[in-house]
Length: 368
Ligand SMILES: Cc1cc2nc3c(=O)[nH]c(=O)nc-3n(C[C@H](O)[C@H](O)[C@H](O)COP(=O)(O)O)c2cc1C
Image 1 (cartoon, rainbow, N blue to C red):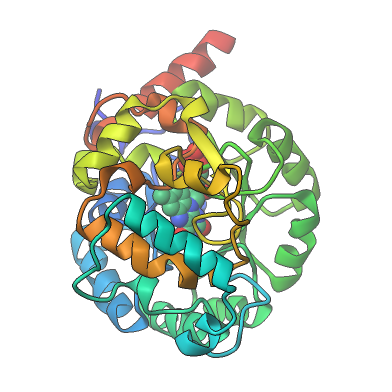
Image 2 (tube, protein in one colour; image 1 turned 180 degrees about the vertical axis):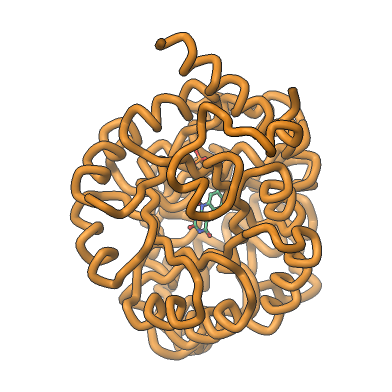
């Protein structure tokens, strides 16, 4: 039976969070693709769209487009809200702080890989992660009718408060037990325990060790497990660890709906768990990506240490915009978790959810 056809009946995966959010399966999916987000929700999971790479003035239309694809079904939007960034979105001021040695290294990479200049600006070559940007992104997001607001890397209480006032369910991604007290004090309704295995920005604690520790300190706040999950046996294991559901990111990158760049898609389809690497060369904070010449160059002897967030973006934004526009294959990469081992072929979002549900049900049945 397909995932769509089981909507009317309770699956063995049904948890309290399904009733609370009105979803058939406790499978949450994070994506920077509007089509993927909508497809996750439409297949019985809960899609969450990441707006962190979007200009504030583009956010309303994108969230409205997802709403038009899902109708009344629930979906969410996610924002990176790191603390300690500059107040102003001031590119020139940030650029002035970049050491000459780092600029020389980036010029060397541009020459070595023959990267032409980009023909225009992108988010990464024009915007500084700053409180001014975050407030504008949060404003656009909170004015929309998304059902859930997720915050990652930080949980600013004033933004969580506003989200709650607009009737949104609030969620925070955490990577260590010590983060939970801040999220709980801010009043979040849901936690994602995201372990070291995850794609994207991640901390040092592995998912298997992290999830039960977060469940213990979260107490009455429901927890979703994240990081390295792409197989139904891991979904079943997450429930055994005390999570009420799972939150997946990497597995959607190789879906039909995502329409990822063909070079990056190839790299992900070929990669195993050991082909992902933690690097600060993407944003300045530790981020798990698929290993390519980009991460290798920054890791090589003699390379400068990546700068802190937000300066690393300001340093490499222009070069990476050129890399993507002109498809400089060796340097192209994307965030990817150890779960990439399950990305072996392109399938639809619906097929992924159907597989996860079937595998998890089988794993749970085998335990009985
Ligand atoms: C390409 C990519 C981009 C990501 N960007 C964000 C983001 O902007 N905000 C966020 O909260 N999480 C982000 N994540 C992390 C996901 O929300 C999720 O926690 C993670 O992917 C789970 O581990 P998995 O990749 O093994 O499934 C990203 C993950 C990937 C793979």
